Image (cartoon, rainbow, N blue to C red; front, side, top):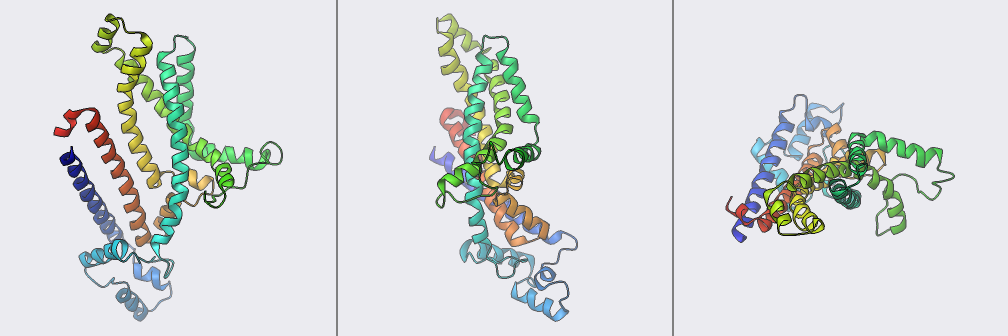
Length: 322
C-alpha cells in the first residue's frame, strides 16, 4: 500500500510541474502580451521598459524566468503582481481561500446529504409517484443555470422581500467565520443552496442509476435466494457498491470547486474567493497571480484524485497492482 501511495505522490508532483510549465509557456506565447508594458504603464518610454524588464527578470531566457518565478512563489514567497505594483500574490490568495472553502464545504455537505438520501429513496421506493418525482426534481436541479438561479435568489431576498420576509438576511458579501460566526452563516445560506442544487441533482440521478444497476447483479440474486431482506440488500450491498461511484464523483467535483470552479456563485453573491481572483488575473494578464491560483487549483484537483485512488485501493486491493 505504501508503494502505491508513493507512486500517486510522484504522479501528483509530475502533473503539477507539467501544469506550471504549460501555463507559463502559454502566457508568454500569447500574442500582444508584454508584461513589462503592463507593469510600466501605457505611456512608458523604452528606457523605463528596459529597467522594468531587468527588475522583473523579463530579459532572461524563458527557462531562467520560469525557475525564478517558481523560486519566488514557493521558496521566498515574495512573488509580486505584474498589474498591482508591489502587491504580493500569496497574501491575496490566502485571503481568498477561506471564502471559497466556506462556500464549497457548506454546499458539499448539503448536496451529499440530499443527493444520497433522495437517490436511495428514488431507487428503492415502491410508490409509483416517488421515483419519477425525485428524478424530475433532479433534472430541474441540473438544468437551472447557477448564475441565473443566484440572480433570482438575490432579486427575492435582497430586493423584493428584503424588508419583510428576509429582513434577517445581511447584505451580499463574505465575512470570516472567526470575525462574525452568525453573520458568516447567514451570508452563506443561499450561496450554499444555490451551488448545492446543481450537484444534488447530478448525485440523485447518478446514485439512483447505480443502485438500480447493482440490484440486477447476480450476487444480489444470490443474496435474495439466501433469504436476505430487501432492506439489507439495499443498504449493505447495493448502496455500498454504488457509493464507490459517488466517492469518485465527489473527489473530482470538490477538488475543482475548491480550486476556483465556483466562480459564478462567487460573482453573483459578491464573494471574493479564488474563482474571482483568478478571473480578474486572467482579464489583466497578471501571470504571477494566474500562476499562483492555477497551482493552487491544480493541487486540490490532483490531491482529490489521489485520495480517490487511495480509497479505491482500500476498497478493492486489485487497484493497487495498477
